[in-house]
Length: 53
Image 1: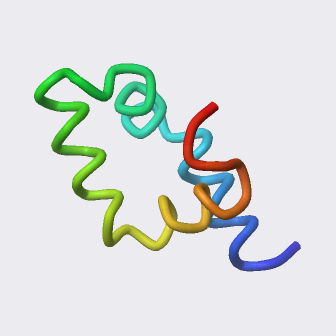
Image 2: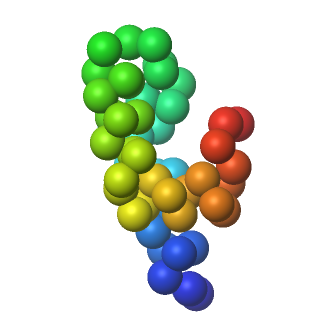
């Protein structure tokens, strides 16, 4: 299993990241999504799973 897949799976299974993807307009969702602009796990998730589900 590649490093990018491991990072993407970490983001996919993270309850905070999952909540932020489901609630992008809430203040905490916006903060977590901003964090995702430089988070290596989030970038790997976007490449592997796509930006939006």
